[in-house]
Image 1 (cartoon, helix red, strand yellow):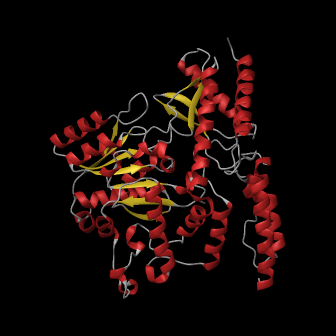
Image 2: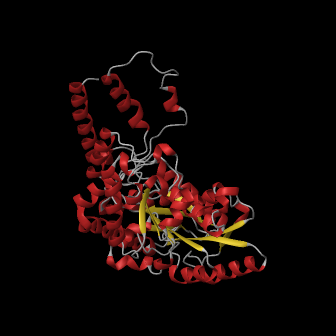
Image 3: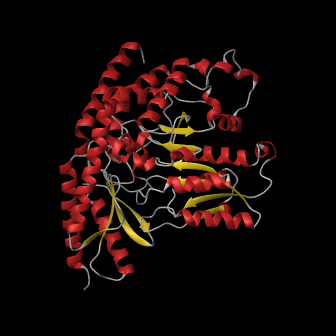
Length: 473
């Protein structure tokens, strides 16, 4: 492709993306296809000779787009969102065009220094403690793995890096913690049998007294606690573990405290929600995802650590071919995580923060929280629905309840969710809270407006009424 063709197709693709932003609400949220449908339409072998871009783009529109689930849809209420925005997309275009590999300062000085500055902006915006140093990881899953590995090295005085684990080390998490923490503990060599799941209270938050009890029991048995993971905004219910008492317990027992605020951390950009990080001064590490609720394309996970030296010592390695004459004066982020190669993720975050400003992001987050409260009030006012968890942010957990036994209610709500999602008019997901099947309504897409939430509630009521009219009495 020559320069003129590239320019022509670049204009067409940008036009397509702009139209997609405008019209994404016209697609079914989830495609009505079966496993294997897309593969059947794709050749079994790569083309021997190059094909014209016209043909490639036509197949993109005819095969790929109809087979996509549309995460930017205004009726996307599933999981948590993976927001993007026009400024973030444009930054990604520039990043892709430069094709930079930002592993060390010398390979991309602007990328390294912008990452340092932008993460300090974020730290201040969220009211996080001074002294935390930031780095962009790809996801919170990776960030939690990095925290677990650093905690492992701290407790073994870096002998694990040299000889491997010589004795079992323990990790403590809420019973509502994200599954990525357990996965990270397995990868880091702790072993799934050495993960202690701490009970939660009626609000699904970790009970500090139960954590203290578990730590004491294990230490009395001669076992070695290494890390506690507290969650701010659990995936199932957006529960908020109390950092202040958990942090004090970790300090008494000399255990690394990692805070997973992947979804909820963005809420702290609002002064009235900054309470979620009370006690964060006790944290050894903390992560939140701008790619969830801060208008920034996936992937972009902000990871903060109190002792950057401990992080670097865990991961650094110094082959001759990576040494430079400025290493002592700069941050080489290749030593701040698992990857050697790194993308220029800070650029899209910089574009977003400059384009929307603090007030623009605050307005979006406040509106999502308002809409969640509105939806919660509708559910509470309805005789056949109930709210299943507190709603501190923008996630509402609810279910249909017509007074039947619990096992029947589980089946009823599974059927309700299936019917709702089959319409293609919205997408919801489910979870289990204290053994009860629950439907999740996550209101955090940047395209969602009040009318979309009203339409969703009307569809939920209509579908539930049709379901109950055919259910056995």
